[in-house]
Amino acid sequence: MSIADRLIRPDLKDLPPVDLAGAPVPGTIRLDANENPYEPLAGGKTINRYPDPQPPALRARMADLYGVRAEQLLVTRGSDDAIDLLCRAFLVPGQDRIVTVEPTFSAYGQFARIQGAKVDAARLTDDFAFDEGAVLKVCRDGSAPKLLFLCTPNNPTGTPVDPAAVRRIAKALPDTLVVADEAYGEFSAAPSLAPEVADNLLVLRTLSKAYGLAGARIGCAIAAPDIIGWLMRVAPPYPLPTPSIEAAMKALAPERMPVHADRVRRLLDDRAMLARQLGEVDEVQAVHEGGNYLFLVVADPADLARRLAAAGVKLRFRPKAAVGGVRVSIGTPQENEALLAVFGVTSERRPGRRAAVTRDTGETAIVVEVDLDTPDAPRRIDTGVGFYDHMLDQIAGHGGFGLTLACTGDHHIDGHHSIEDVALALGEALDLALGDRKGIGRFGFALPMDETSAEVLIDLSGRPFAKFEGDFSDEKVGDFPTQMTPHVFRSLADSMRAAIHVKVVGDNDHHKVEACFKAFGRALRQGLATSGGTSVPSTKGML
Ligand code: PMP
Image (cartoon, rainbow, N blue to C red):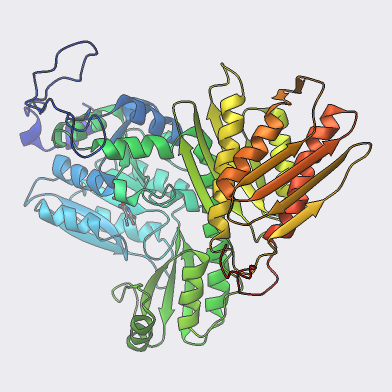
């Protein structure tokens, strides 16, 4: 008998699967689900129809993301839902128990109690380290718990649990489902246990944290297929809202992944910076790092609460974890600066001008993120048109700003849509990052390169205008059509609301195209630069 069949609530064994209308078959008339046939009055063309209970494309994408097979993964309404399903499927009310390792995420105990089960707690050590022996002792003291929740890294203390310890515990407790909750796994250097799930070892993951989709409520349970089968059996009929499925598919599109990775890195950098700066504050007695948060122990929580309230900053006090315990989520640089100010500290990191734009059409899917105030910020560019990547790298490199840009497009037709749409999206991101344009240089010009001279005049005026003088004798440079050069500057001018004049003369088309992009980057650098002033550089007082 499999572990799942041994541990499942006996009264569920003959529960039939939920009686659902079948998944839609293209070309059939759908009169089987009492849906309203008319187009919804709420946008979203298909939300008058029930969603697929386990949308195969999302299930496959998440399985790929976590390195498992689709039948090992159940997409759930956030990982909260996965915890609830586990409790409902396996805990016999009034009889079974779970074990948690306190202080930890409260939902484990909450859902178990709602199910009528008992909650026993092991504890982290006094300085919040994981104590394998203590956990095994509580699990062995009495009947085997049906579920043991190990949160790694732990919310709220940040404590990691060594994957080897999780493996050992799962082996030592064959009658317990050992659940490694990796909600914050992307913020940890430890490898995920997801590819190892089998028998009584399970993993929970979520798109709420690293992928920024807390409002969409998408997470998953990863486990042996027969455990997944039981969870599916106790899940409600159509648990995943269509807009959430669509949001998850968009956010997990391959071209979005470098931006997610950048953001995780940035949150980790900011976490380290906050930990260092708060560690030097007298009233902060201890700082623990983990996930996208810090756990602090402060001397006078009531006083801190008053100051936070006055500053309009909300933190989570965790007095049960430790006297003076408080959990701090890592925010934007502006938010972190406001937090530090409550502790009387000036942030080491000035909030920068950043913006992200996504652009999805039938022809292209694009994500762009710019960081105007970090000249050494990484540049990662992948448009599918190699020479264009090189040109965009010239713009950002010479422009002195960080750029992450990825595009998947209809290259089977040609590069035209990708080249144009990327220019539009980049221009929009620059426009957004410039904000009210206060304090900028506004104007820029440049005159470089070998036998070629390119002149780019730029005015970040808020008024789009493009002028291009020059022609090319070759049809293409690499995989980039030369005639797209004026088109790119026109698209940039439109979407970043700038006047851009380009003039190029020379003999070699490769040089000429490259010189235009380089000169544009240099001109842009001058226009973007802030001089420390705070006024709009216009006698009109607005751009
Ligand atoms: N596990 C842990 C450790 C968490 O901190 C949270 C949310 N705070 C969750 C699971 C649930 O996350 P979600 O339901 O958004 O996936």
